Length: 389
Ligand SMILES: Nc1ncnc2c1ncn2[C@@H]1O[C@H](COP(=O)(O)OP(=O)(O)OP(=O)(O)O)[C@@H](O)[C@H]1O
Ligand SMILES: [Mg+2]
Image (tube, rainbow, N blue to C red; front, side, top):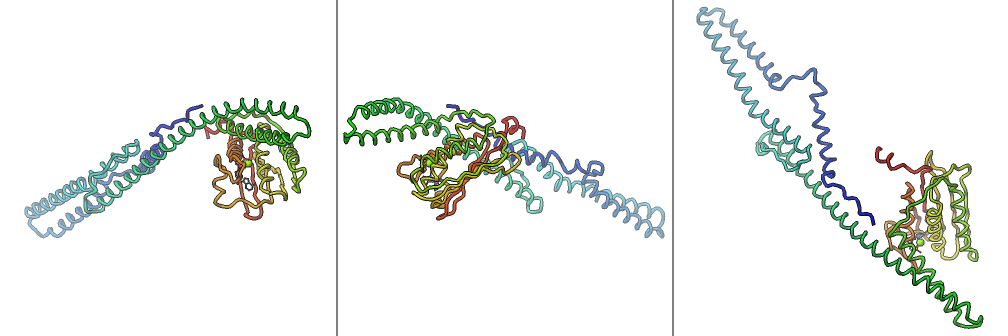
């Protein structure tokens, strides 16, 4: 059996990284490239302008002073202005620029997928400290989400491996059962042929033969579930495929007050499908509907073109419906509410429909009936098309 494909764990982090990467690699600055001014200039220009004004005011107020005195006052005032600018610049560099650089660096680390980062200025008791704390919190959340995704991934992988092993085992077992079963069926045929027509043993042999057919069906379903056959797709008439299955189902209810109505879709284009496999799906759904009717009722089968590339086949019955708590389980392998059921019919049907690029949906109205709808594309999406999408 094919090994389940293991996704590299690094790819799990990539959506996160990509989000951050997109945000950081398309910096806002790029959008305002022609009007770019760094923050030091933006801070210094108004401060320098204010200080220059101050110096000018000094200039006017010192007009009455002696030129020497005036010169030294102005010199001191200008030097003061320069010193104020320098102090401001140094303070801003320490208080704002350093943390900004650190933040940029750490964002880049996160964008590269490294979530073991933290900014050091988060202990500050100001707005920049708030920014640092928020950043650290955000990275911690991302880290936890990634760990959770990795944990789920590991659980799923081990479950998939477990299921694969079980599948192999079941397939092997089913294969082993089939041969002796064919032998038993053959012997029973000979025994029933040789028995006198009045022999009471005939009834027993008939029961054994029916049970053999049942075991054979269970084993075949199990084998099909464990080792699915690749569908053989070709363009075929879906109306005909459904009609064929409806014909089979009608055979089952000949002596019962059950009516099976079938409405074809007129002028339906050919649908790419495997008629044998879809026949199996439809028969499973029809038999479920018939069994749900408990003897009497109606089954309506309706084919409708629902979109440019989609066609649906709805199988509606007037049975008791499916309780809400069972709706989530009916597609699980081995879920059955019937004494003689295997619970493999619906999971198998859904898998085949999904292999056809379609989906199998159910709606149910408790006490009034259920509708199983099979939605199929006229043309299956090609794998390369989905990969490029
Ligand atoms: N049309 C329906 N109406 C009501 N219940 C349904 C209907 N179709 C399916 N179910 C419920 O879904 C369960 C699972 O169906 P599924 O076909 O997988 O297995 P099964 O019919 O029980 O067994 P098998 O198909 O092997 O005979 C059924 O046991 C039944 O409870
Ligand atoms: Mg069934």
